Length: 240
Image (cartoon, rainbow, N blue to C red; front, side, top):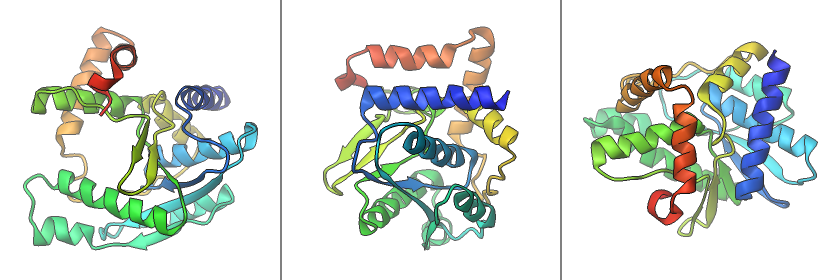
């Protein structure tokens, strides 16, 4: 069963790459590793893309320590099993967000600080691209959050060039459902890193995920249809 799921996910990663040219020959890609199931799957299937396609590129797993005391030993072992050394970088982002700033919406500030730190680390390591573990559900959740709480359409691109940083963001899992990722990781026996962030699990995004779960029960395939409708629309209106 898990072998079939692995082939399914790999096919979706390959399809996204063929459509959006996410990974190209000569790339040096920093893979942003949180230690969660999504980043584990991201590294695993980028490694498969390297092994089973003609593409020649480099992979560098990176981990930004936010200061929450997350235990990264399982992540280090996972990277080593695939033949990679995890590049770890310590930061004080957690302290800034929760102690210094005491943000009422900590996730937004944390995400901004984390993105900047990851981009700087990637550039220092000579990478021209950063791979992120956002999947199909994340894409749809982001759209719904922007509609419900900002009154506009906003969705991340599978491929985004940041001219100020001179770095390109790629999201190879954009066609892969969270359910397939979770089942694959569980079936392989991989151990995600426990997220000790105080705000973990208590966000608007989790509320929207619950809402879309209910929608999926009533209308099977709803998430994929939402993503498809976005791709079929004017990209200048939707992909921001």
